[in-house]
Image 1: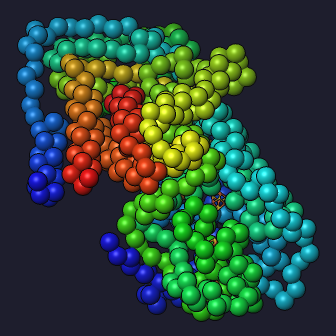
Image 2: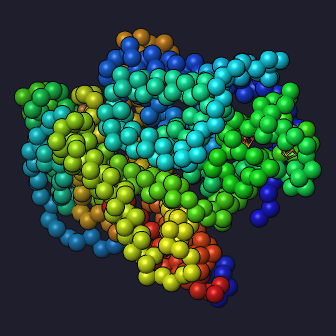
Image 3: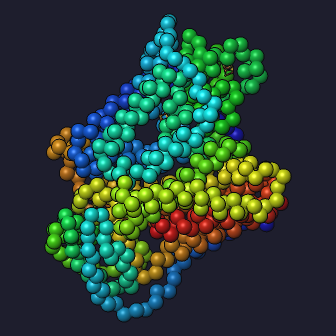
Length: 147
Length: 443
Ligand code: SF4
Ligand code: SF4
Ligand code: SF4
Ligand SMILES: [Cu+2]
């Protein structure tokens, strides 16, 4: 095959892997309530999983100093004073995996006080691994062609 | 692809030959560096509001790993302030060579240290303490000062830039990854060098100093140890030195067979993966262990860290190699095939740093106005609120970086494998598994 043509073919396959719409399993949206304990420098629970469309209700309880919780991609946040709790409510309408992190300087390791919210499946991870496979396949094919 | 000689442009050429433009940058860098040390020592202990942390670990790091190394190779070393005071002292001059050279010991570095193992060790030392280093202004200030004074001390004992060549913790990986950069300093015509008397590019002359990095420019075939200090452009009487634009990763076509360089590739690959998990992952226990220097948990963390870098990563790599048949001795195969991990590791660092930098870049504006965290507001940006940047394109950008790194690594593997007469498939598979792990850690 013409190498330019194969490259084009692989680019198109890459586009499909990266962007082809996937069926979203229809699950009735629920209200999901989480209690998250925040301390220097960790959340527990630190990994949340919800379905797309769920209403996420996070009760943030701070054990030591003032901590915040900011959700990447959703741009929503909440702050809890020491020993107090505060509640954050939002609708998880965007699928994917998002870091949530402390947004109030709480000490040295503050920039790395991080948790993870997964909405639906973490499809982008699977798509990315698919792209990596496709890339490897493409390189091997081009080696074989030259040989 | 052909090379394009940048030094053919008279403007570029003159800007390099004259010492003043470089000196101007040097002074700015040195002032910034000394200010970072002072800020670290006397400024606020809150890292994200201290100039030393914000400008070194966010701003400088971002520029270094996202721009300088991938596109300019050792470009950072061309303007780095760390070796300057020592070098000026050693030379007895800031600009052109003086009439009378000061008498320092001028020893040659002992042969056993003339490799990058010390740099591997100094990098690992910092890496094991990195959670504290990255977040504590005091410690950052002290480490910066120690590097400055170590460079001064070595300049008075050894000839040339011993600190840069053999000890600098960042110099090692900049050199390794500079091989991938689309820029190089090389001679134009070998014959001219053969006939050149006195080799002033190495030995120095009235026009300039002999190569501070202890390389003979006439023999350069890769970027690793040329610090782009530009001296040889000034000293070569035959105008035989060029700076060229070239295809990416041109140096990787000639794989190195040195173990110190091979392990540098593993150290960098492993640290990027460990940082992605520890610093950016959701696992609080890991963060506690990494931050708790001196505790039992930290010792376990340190042992696991070293086991991943010196055991697991090279171990699986060797397993892949054992299966391949070749006439080359195993060590040589190991070293030359590890070349494939150079572009892979670079792109791992790019993907990791994108997240760290974009999330924390907004601190730069605030720290600019209030560098010591004392409540100043020099430029009116002190109250600029923390806000992650470009969160929507972060994940796709990381995927792109990692997949490009994988393709780049697979193609490098193919070249070095055919040179060693083995199959590239085990190495390509290895790179794929490492990339998938990194994707899982970051996404
Ligand atoms: S090796 Fe280190 S100290 Fe030397 S110029 Fe490069 S970064 Fe600076
Ligand atoms: S001074 Fe110039 S011509 Fe002479 S050896 Fe060095 S690079 Fe070659
Ligand atoms: S003198 Fe030339 S070869 Fe030596 S480090 Fe400087 S630029 Fe590189
Ligand atoms: Cu915090």
